[in-house]
Image 1 (cartoon, rainbow, N blue to C red):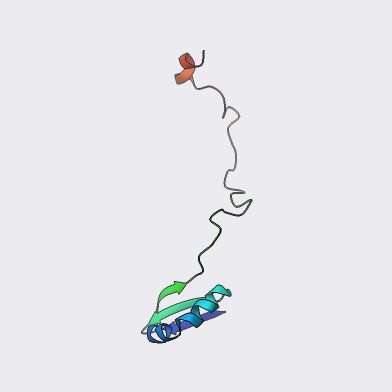
Image 2 (image 1 turned 60 degrees about the vertical axis):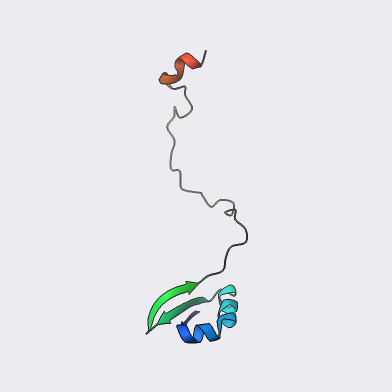
Length: 76
């Protein structure tokens, strides 16, 4: 559910708005009817969930791990 509050009301009811944001509501603070900021919960787990990068790498070249010619003299 989306909640819009004007800035004066948001100052008065900040605790309630924070609770709503923590419960998943989209809380937007407005001034003169124009959206200014959105309250969002801070993620406590800094690690992305498993599989978050799935689909980001489409394909790798067949010779991806082949030695580079520039470093051939160092590979002896």
